[in-house]
Picture 1 (cartoon, one colour):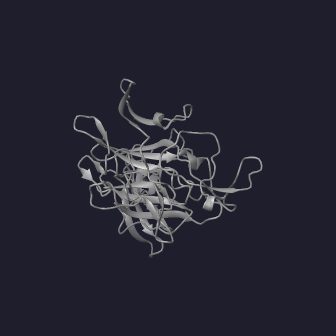
Picture 2 (picture 1 turned 120 degrees about the vertical axis):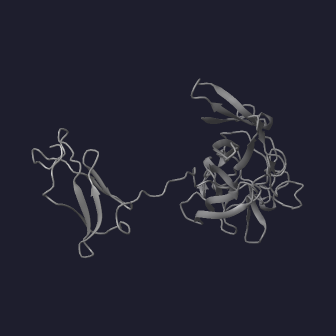
Picture 3 (picture 1 turned 180 degrees about the horizontal axis):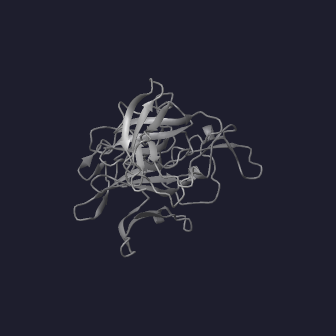
Length: 356
């Protein structure tokens, strides 16, 4: 088991006290082993390009004080909408690359403290606030000797992304914004309606990687360029750090959480179970129509399945076994079982009741 811990600096309010540690917990001897520790005082991209908000480019210590709006056009308070940008780190998710390296999803506590078009909580505050959730996605390389190394300047292990300063590609939104310089997952920005970069650091901390695939999903706000007040997912290439595609669950929707983090964790689900018809033939000794505990299943009974919407044609055959069990599925049905279709299971009554 793996556990991520954040030192929040809530008491000292010093950015130098912000740090993360990741531990491995042994189920055998119930001991914790620290895998890596790293500070959170590194420079980040500005979450929002609006004047006044564009200077917020680091993680901040946790705080229970409601922050002031950061958008002050021409020095005056915006009477319509107040932007809240107050990124406070939570290590919200850990996932694994195929070589054992770690992907770390960082969530912004500030997004959890706010919402979309939210009334102020202070007495006499007449502003409506729009919260922003500014997380992060980091890669930590597992080395051959079992140690771990944080990504640095767009490089992690054998992989190098275009986010590094020596890549030959210039990103206005990515000026050394990671623990070691340019970000490995550098393609985490949003283009506004004026074709400028309106937001950076879009990820929200929920991540998922399917083993064997070279992609990682991350929750994100404004994941699709020029679509705003949105939240959804961005899919990154785990070898290059480039964005492959994006999805929005909602955008410009009344009652949604806007940019403040309306999507939680991500997980993979298996394909739906195949259709089956079955399950048991038993000897109903007391003839009450109920499978009583003492009543035995009957093996070696041949059953047939008939398509009642196709001239009652026999489409499957099975023989009961393992206590009277039988199943019709794609392994023993001609063609395939159809949903919302009429079938009938039949049994010839002249068969021997084995073991009864």
